[in-house]
Length: 81
Image (cartoon, rainbow, N blue to C red; front, side, top):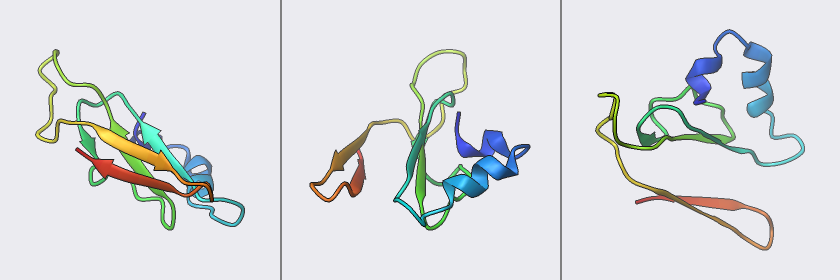
Protein backbone atom coordinates (compact mmCIF):
# COMPACT_ATOMS: atom_id res chain seq x y z
CA UNK A 1 0.00 0.00 0.00
CA UNK A 2 1.14 3.61 -0.55
CA UNK A 3 2.33 5.57 2.48
CA UNK A 4 -0.87 7.63 2.71
CA UNK A 5 -2.70 4.42 3.72
CA UNK A 6 -0.60 4.28 6.91
CA UNK A 7 -1.70 7.51 8.60
CA UNK A 8 -3.03 5.44 11.53
CA UNK A 9 0.45 3.95 12.07
CA UNK A 10 2.69 7.00 12.64
CA UNK A 11 5.56 4.88 13.97
CA UNK A 12 5.76 3.06 10.62
CA UNK A 13 5.90 6.37 8.74
CA UNK A 14 8.52 7.68 11.16
CA UNK A 15 10.66 4.60 10.55
CA UNK A 16 10.37 5.10 6.78
CA UNK A 17 11.75 8.61 7.34
CA UNK A 18 14.71 7.41 9.41
CA UNK A 19 17.90 7.59 7.33
CA UNK A 20 20.29 7.09 10.23
CA UNK A 21 21.34 3.62 9.07
CA UNK A 22 20.40 3.47 5.38
CA UNK A 23 18.62 5.13 2.49
CA UNK A 24 15.07 3.81 2.14
CA UNK A 25 13.08 3.77 -1.08
CA UNK A 26 9.56 2.46 -0.39
CA UNK A 27 7.39 1.13 -3.22
CA UNK A 28 3.69 0.77 -2.44
CA UNK A 29 1.02 -0.56 -4.75
CA UNK A 30 -2.77 -0.85 -4.70
CA UNK A 31 -3.72 2.43 -6.38
CA UNK A 32 -3.66 2.53 -10.18
CA UNK A 33 -1.02 5.24 -10.56
CA UNK A 34 2.74 5.66 -10.77
CA UNK A 35 3.82 8.78 -8.88
CA UNK A 36 5.58 10.17 -5.84
CA UNK A 37 3.25 13.12 -5.31
CA UNK A 38 0.05 11.50 -3.99
CA UNK A 39 1.83 9.77 -1.10
CA UNK A 40 2.74 10.95 2.41
CA UNK A 41 6.30 12.21 2.25
CA UNK A 42 9.08 10.36 4.09
CA UNK A 43 12.04 12.77 3.90
CA UNK A 44 14.91 12.40 3.60
CA UNK A 45 13.91 9.00 2.18
CA UNK A 46 11.73 8.46 -0.87
CA UNK A 47 8.55 6.57 -1.68
CA UNK A 48 6.47 5.79 -4.75
CA UNK A 49 3.04 4.40 -5.50
CA UNK A 50 3.52 1.88 -8.30
CA UNK A 51 0.12 0.31 -8.73
CA UNK A 52 -1.08 -1.39 -11.86
CA UNK A 53 -3.43 0.05 -14.40
CA UNK A 54 -6.68 -1.21 -15.77
CA UNK A 55 -10.05 -2.04 -14.38
CA UNK A 56 -12.30 -1.05 -11.54
CA UNK A 57 -12.67 2.56 -12.81
CA UNK A 58 -9.93 3.77 -10.45
CA UNK A 59 -7.16 4.51 -12.95
CA UNK A 60 -5.33 7.73 -12.17
CA UNK A 61 -3.83 10.14 -14.69
CA UNK A 62 -0.22 9.03 -14.05
CA UNK A 63 0.06 5.65 -15.71
CA UNK A 64 3.40 4.12 -16.64
CA UNK A 65 6.38 2.34 -15.16
CA UNK A 66 9.02 3.12 -12.58
CA UNK A 67 12.53 1.98 -13.37
CA UNK A 68 14.93 1.58 -10.47
CA UNK A 69 18.66 0.95 -10.61
CA UNK A 70 20.81 -0.03 -7.66
CA UNK A 71 24.41 1.17 -7.82
CA UNK A 72 27.52 -0.51 -6.45
CA UNK A 73 27.21 1.79 -3.42
CA UNK A 74 23.60 0.51 -2.94
CA UNK A 75 22.11 3.93 -3.81
CA UNK A 76 18.79 3.53 -5.65
CA UNK A 77 18.02 5.82 -8.58
CA UNK A 78 14.43 5.91 -9.83
CA UNK A 79 13.16 6.97 -13.24
CA UNK A 80 9.44 7.23 -13.98
CA UNK A 81 8.60 6.25 -17.56
